[in-house]
Structure formats: C-alpha cells, structure tokens
Image 1 (cartoon, one colour):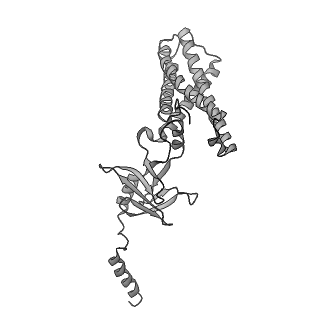
Image 2: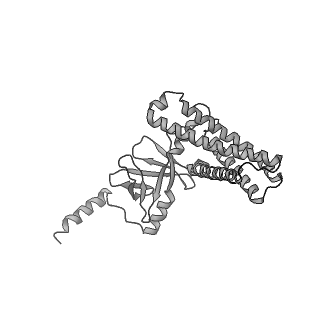
Length: 272
C-alpha cells in the first residue's frame, strides 16, 4: 500500500486537472473509427489549376488503419510511416507528440485532416480526385496498348481485311505507339528533373517537360479518335469477335485515361 500511495495521489491530481487518459475503447469500435478516417489525402497547398495539378496526384498522403484502431501516417521526421494512437474523438497522436485531427462535415463524413504544424491541411481524396483512378486508367491504357502492339507483331502487319478494318487498325496502332511515346517523354522529363533539381521548375520552359505536355494533349486527341474508330471496328469485315472487343476495350481505356488527364489539367491545361 505505501508503494501505491504516490500513484493514487497522482491519479487524483490528474483527475482534477483533466489529464487522466481516456478509457480505452473496445478494439472493434476503435478499429471501426480508424477505418472511417483511413484513405488518401491531398495537401491543400497543391496547385488547383493548370498542368501543375498533376503534382498533387503524384504525392498523396495515405492514412492506413490498423486492426487495433491505430493509424499509420507518413511524417517528415522519420522515413517510415509513424504509428498514431487515438487520444480523443477524431484525434490521434504518435510517440513523438505529433497530432493529427480529422474534420467532419455536417453529415458526419470525414473530409479533411489537419496536422500539428499549422502550415497545411489535407483534403480527403474522394471520387475522381482520388489519384488511384488516374493510376488505374494509366495501367489499363498501358496494358491494352501493349497487347495491341503484340497483336500487330503476331499478325505480322495490320491485316485489316477491309478499308474499315484497316482504318481501325491504323488508329489502334497509332494510339498504342503514341501511349508509349507519352511514357518515354514522361521518363525523359523525370530524368531531367533529377539532373537539374530546382532549376527544372524555375527555369522554364523545359524542352522535356514541354514535349511531355504535347504528348499528354495527344493522348486526349487519340482517345477521341479511337473512340470514334470503334464504330469502324464493329462494321469491319473479317474481324473476329475477340478483335472487335479488344479494340473497344482499348478505346474505352483511352477515353477514360484521356478524360482523367483533362480532369487533372495535364491535357490542354495551359502553361505550368
């Protein structure tokens, strides 16, 4: 008992001062609340107009919920994501004392995250503003572009079978080649950025970046033409069902990808 007396006194002082830790919630409830706030967030200091919007899509902050109700959130203090424990309603804290708070709208849905720096907040990425859809569209367009090129090699040429079929084949092949040229121009711009550092941003225009923008515009144009060419593919003679479906899938992938490039301002978004 004498050894417990100091702890009992400190507990009473903590209660009077309002410093007593909150009772731990059951793990299922804590896990449910953590899952409610988990997701991707975009800094509100990102560009909201023009081609520079894409930089926001390239660096989302991902909040991961753990089964015990804790969160894993990247910070600028340590390389690995930091573990945050819940200390109050919509409030989490890590071992270093860093806190994050989540803000809800009038309907109770989380739409923003604020950290303890006071320098920025992060908007929850929902709908088309979630970069995952841009990544998925990019992957789909790349997959069908690759299979289109493989089909061209396997058939040893266009083998359109008719005028309509040849026209559709030319459009599909051009779109597939254009996609990989777009990727190559993006890689070239990234390598130039690594080599030049901050000069890459402040010393404009940069040839590699301007080329990348031109190809991004071309992706949207190719998507429109490819979408129209689907009509030719379904009216072409001597085309099998699989080839027609593949052409349509390629067109859909490009239309979705082109639309997201337009949404993020990368296509026809004006100067950076």
